[in-house]
Length: 155
Image (cartoon, rainbow, N blue to C red; front, side, top):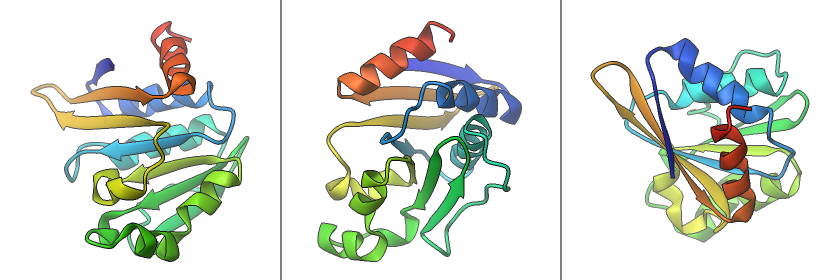
């Protein structure tokens, strides 16, 4: 587990930009946190770090938005998928097909589709602090442990 506090939206985006430098495609990043905790801001920074030039907005009404930069970015919002079975979620968004396309899949509200998340992934937990936001990174799998080690080294 790796934790970092950010004190502004710019810092949250900056952290995500740094993470993007270490992505090669095929990664799944799951975001957890209450409304307004910084999840979409983080995705905006990740997109900037991947060279995406389009504006990043929450995909709430479309479920998945696709962006293209150095790597494809597939931005999933699972908020409206709450209560669906894993098969229904797969039919709604085709999550595994996005994962297999070799881009970066980022899932907001990942806790609502926990039953379909891959076992190997990076979980990022967002919470409010008195001065900003606390981001806790939890790797699941060696690829994500190495990714966090590189991020923690400051690279």
